[in-house]
Image (cartoon, rainbow, N blue to C red; front, side, top):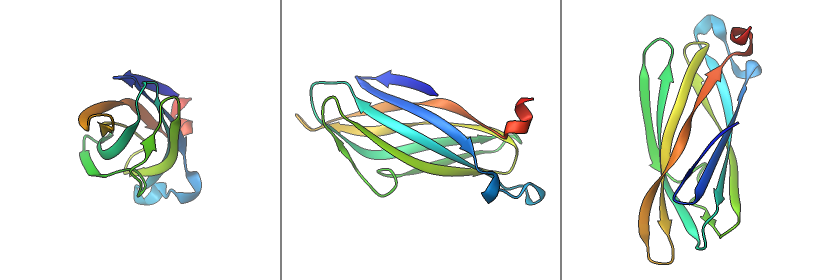
Length: 128
């Protein structure tokens, strides 16, 4: 698990290769990732947007941007966390992702960006 803290918001990421949803012969490798967003501040924050940079080991890069996460724009109270699972497909056996969340501090409606740490997406047999 990798994690980072930006302005008191901790983001932790764990990944899992999804062999049952992958088709290596057709260059389709599916990965799931679990993210925990933990509010370590003294005020409520809301996750409004997300932006991802997705890198495939064949040299391609994709950018994905949109509102919220998995259809939600969660409010995270001080000391609480929001957890979700999503997925990403690659054309190769290895790649990585990183990005950021746009958050709003509900106390004064100040927006700020929270870093999502870079994490690796690797088919297990490539680790041997």
